[in-house]
Image (cartoon, rainbow, N blue to C red; front, side):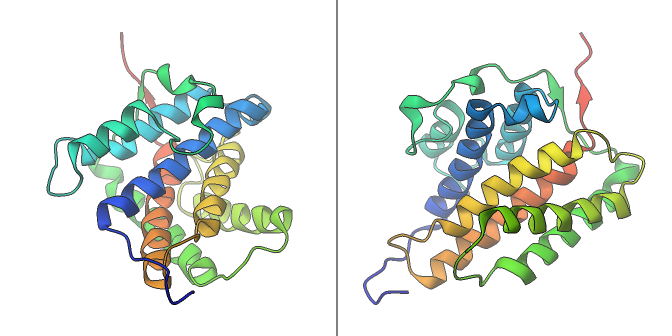
Length: 208
């Protein structure tokens, strides 16, 4: 990386990673990738709000104003003015992991994380987006099939595709930041994308 590229704070790493994820979800809504995969875009937004929830009212981890930015303007400062605003209508679903399933959840999430880090943490460029998306998706899909075979379903391919889009954006998000910060951003993004992929398979509806 360049000599004059900057280091950014831990809070900025959190915001940058989650905004990349949010923008990928909105791109899915813009392009109809959610409908093609037969996934409710509101379900994916519910997953996004679920994954940022641990940072709410935790000023030692994230400034409340920055949390509000993630909650009320997800995808900013990307092409937010042109976004669909579908984030305003998340589904009434939740992703609580039953204690009996927690060990399996952690095992699947951490295996995805380790695979993605091994393959992509130090990647310099993505020369073929299509081939990369297929490779990344296959890596994640194999882990879900291995550890959650009964929960693997028709939506698995779609959610993996959308979260692979998010990871691709994070891997390419290197402008103006130094190599140490790029690594921190990628590690944070990979961890939370891995958790999102696994959490998706524990989705439950909120009883009315």
